[in-house]
Length: 153
Image (tube, rainbow, N blue to C red; front, side, top):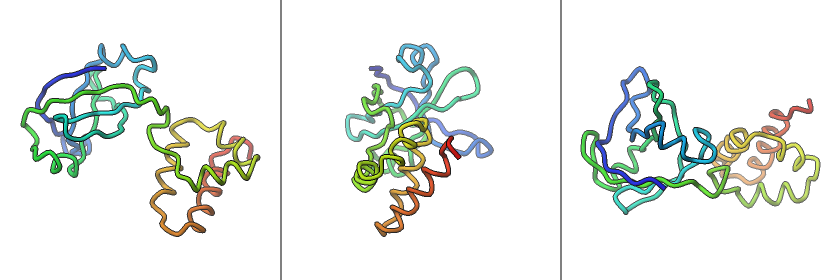
């Protein structure tokens, strides 16, 4: 776990314009999975969210703070904020939706393919399919994405 206080930064527009908090490389290297660590970030003891590390370009890293989260805590870029980061016990950094859990229980071949994917590919599939509201379309898209990302083509 790491606790600090710092100014909320904003990347240049050509680098995405994201709001961020800088995490020094020496802090990142203390985590078991180093830069591949998924984190839980707590801002001002008010909100928590799951996140990952991004390269800052100077050997250090940053975590993105969404505009939505800044509004929730009533903060602006350039203001000081207290934050705490700790390793996320969930290696995916996202919860597996019930639809996917059931699908993987029922289809052993699909489960085998999914289990061999990298955590990043699994996370991408979960995020993409979670946006779909219709369950039938969600199932079809999940199957399509898992098969597309299979190394068994």
